Image (tube, rainbow, N blue to C red; front, top):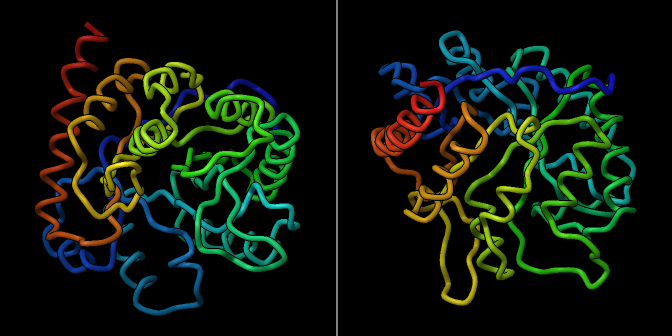
Length: 283
């Protein structure tokens, strides 16, 4: 990919994560959702009901693809079969964009099925940026890199997470999926200022927001995606809208999934927060 400045970001509006629980409701009700995000790996299959429903739903809604297994930070070679399947799905779905995480998910060929944190060093940033550059060349498009929540730190780290993220996206010339809840979770777990993180992220690189709930265990928080978004995360989202402007935002829910109507109400709350801020910025 060329190292030109990122293009003017596309704006899709307000979306939801597409989950199997809501397939039929989406097809029947045609809810007021601007777009849906899919977990790429759930559809990297030769056939079956998930692809059947996805083909139907994408006739009415834009789709973005969000992966959890690219393992961009691993020391293992990139999985070429995985990338081929991802590219084939993208050809079928024609997503508005593709994203994955700032993490590693396994080593020695074993997938840990978790988003594991990186050491924040210049060496690790270059390693990850080189791998992202390869993926972007293979896919023929920029990808979005999401900040993951974390629960441990490395003694080797010599920079802050937000500086690490900024270094990677600059070197790889990729974009950012900024997870607002993950910033809140990591800030709580590691005792840093969430606003300092938010204000250090390069504005021109952010193309999508994630909003989600979590489980607060008193001394630490786990990013479980099984609760509604809490007020402090909504407040952080309002700050993000003021800083970054019109960025496509969506609600993630992966467990304890409620009826579609409850998620639509949460999505309306995101709209309610963003609308006056965006209107004021263009007034």
